[in-house]
Amino acid sequence: GNPVESADVEDVMKAIKNKCGQDGRRAHSFFAMSKENMARIFSWSDQVCPPETYFAEAKTTGERTLRTKHLMYKAFSSTGWTIWTRYVGISHRRQYHLTVFFLSCRNFELIKLREGDLTFGLEDPKAFNTPYFELRLLNRKGWQRKISKAQRKQIFAPDLPACDAHHWLPLWRKYLQDVVYRRPLTPDDYIFPAIGANGVVQVGEHVSHEDVQKWITEFTTGAGVAQANGNFTTHCFRRGGAQYRFMFAPVGRRWTLRQVRWWGGWADGEHRDTLIKYLLDELGTYEDDYSGMLLPNRPDFDQTFLGEGSSITAATTGQLTLMHQSLSTEMR
Image (cartoon, rainbow, N blue to C red; front, top):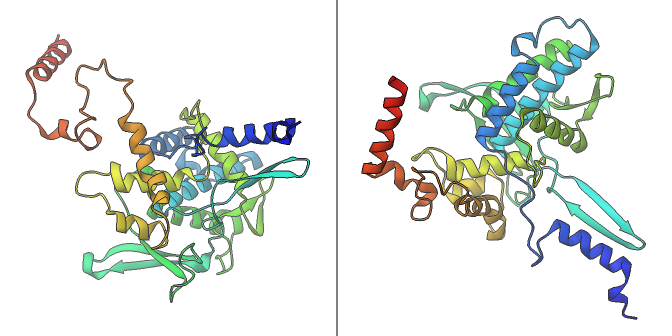
């Protein structure tokens, strides 16, 4: 018979279709980590492991392991969300001589961050001596042909508590020095070291992609933000941060496409579809969501960008009536 119709080929095709849509495009199965979800996860973490206990004397190994994991996750996720680093994770499924590779991201950037890549105690004299620290990413994709192969980013304090790398990364670094290593960090020390099953930090080894993915699953499930029809992967921070700066930040504080391209480390000649995957796919999903059609005061998503027209137009008689009814109910 026709070898194309064999069971082996059908199994491989089924696996590919599960990863991609029927037309060959990637299915929407990996979600961006929104600012709101970041806040919910951090709030849940504060309940499980209160921040005031981070530097307290741990009575058991379990307490110390819990604090280390929660503080490390906060530093890792807020930094990834802020600087949009890439990660890599490869899984494969072998069918006789056929292997299907699924790539979730491109390369290691944040997990290989070292103490020597950070410079603290800086101030910007042009902005009233606003404090910041500098973070250097080496060999970013698309930067290999530039004169400087390192991309330097200045990290200031944003008005986003759960996405504040300016706060959480230095706090985690202090925890590493004072609680974990009990010594100053050397330039070769990994900022995010591997943690063994017994809670002991493995000096000289960086955290693995698999461990980060386990934490993401644990924290999103615990905070109740896990999605039924998809997954949060290590790529969710990069996508969430990029989409926020391009679409969801307050009006007047959104970034241009050129700024997004530079900050995300995309090469000048990289295909436009890459940026569309990060930015516009989520917008299409957002605008095509009609689950709230019965809402009396539903924003006008069809006519304006993200329904912004509803916030700048005059209130209608129907909206004023709803507001009056709500106020009357509250005052009774």
